[in-house]
Length: 150
Image (cartoon, rainbow, N blue to C red; front, side, top):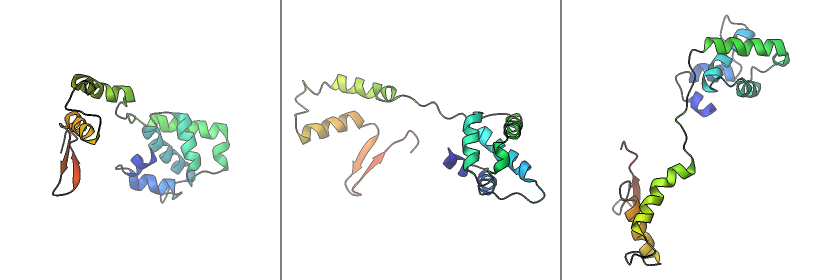
């Protein structure tokens, strides 16, 4: 998650706050709130995760251990955040391989003479299963994978 924040539009502000750099004219408490606001977005509003991450930052200080200060800062950060990061729905491994399993069932490698139990058969099976997305280019001696974009 920290890598995503560091690669976002907020990266410079985040990195400075994460490294404990307080913007000119701002107090340490305002810097705490600003970092928590960024964390609120990226943590999807999970205050426990925000707390764990804040404790890893260079802004961490004894005052953060005061329950009232920590809760007030996290609450304020949540109020400042009008929307939260929503990662692309992750599918389970079973979901990822459902289509693959169906393709292999249709090819029936155990009963098909095209796929003998050796490297040639395995190569043919691989080529038939992944022909829509994977190509080996002998001239370049590398594989090219199509990701629905390029």
